[in-house]
Structure formats: C-alpha cells, structure tokens
Length: 222
Image (cartoon, rainbow, N blue to C red; front, side, top):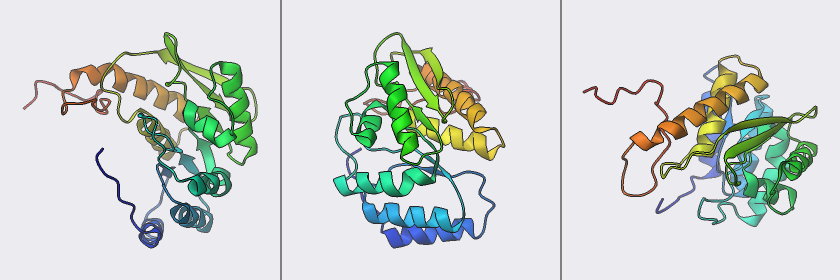
C-alpha cells in the first residue's frame, strides 16, 4: 500500500441506501473506516435497515502503524460495536478496544473478549495470528462458554489479507444461512487452506496475498 484516500461520508451513506433499498442483503461486513464521520453514517444505516454486521475493526497495520484516528477509535467503540453481530479483532486491535495490554495468553484473550461483549457486540472472535507458538488460536465468545479454534501456524511470505478474508468468509457463511458458530468454524478452515496454499502464488515483489481461490485453482489451466 502506498496511499489511502477516504471517500466522503455522504457517498458512503448513498451507497448504503442504494444497496439496501434494491437488494435482499443476507449479511454485512465492515472493514476499515478511518474517521468518525464515516462510522456515524454506517451505524445510522445499519439502524435504519435493522441490520447487524460482521465488524472487522481494522485499526493497526501489519507494520504497526495506526489506521484509525483517536476519535474514530472512540466512535467505533460507541457506534459500531453495538451493531456488531460479531467483532473480529486481532490481538493488537483487541488491546486498543479494551484499553489493555496485548494479550499473551488465552486467559487474557478470553477476558478481553468479555470486555468487548460488554461494550455491545453480540459475540467476539479474538484472532491469535499475531501470537507465538506452533498453533494460531482464536477465541470465540458469545456470552456462554468461550470456544478455542486452532490451526497449525504456517510460515509464509504471502499473508496479506488474513483478517479481511476471515471476516468476509464469516459474512459469506451467514449469507448462505449458516449459524454464526458454524460460519466462524467454516471461515477459519477456509482461511487456513488459503494460507497453506499461498506459497503457490507469485504476486509482485513483496509479501503477497493469501490464496483465496485455492479450492478451485487449476495452476496449469490456460
């Protein structure tokens, strides 16, 4: 990424109205929204059309750079968390949302998930991809018992888009009629396969994307 340009909140609001007034929307996913004004119109739109969302609070770049302004972080907590059917923060994002240090164990991950739930989200999936160890462990919590979702950690240079892919896959599962818990499990499995297969891709000179089409890819097809 070399540059980012925000579109106006008015255009975002018009896009929401255009889509929701015309289509039967089965699921909504929210990714990076960098400013307070945009967050406000998205929350307003979700309330107007009575929709809950898969909220991927993209707040910190892989480089460690902040992607949201401080006022936008507060607005995300206050406006969008209550509209989240599920929030899917990674470890640094969960720390920002809860005002705590980055979790280094599953007990702290579960505690931060509970804090985010109390802030308004219906459920939380804290992603452990930024952690250490041979397994990447996520914690899913909906107010009952927390559920561990694990997969072997894969060493790869093609890892762009992991969090965005996971949240989009959850939304796709919900649109297909899966329960939330099943959508999370299926999405986790899909993402793991996309990371495993990412080594087959040669895209550009830097860190590449995960392999979104790994289940259908025919590398020798022309």
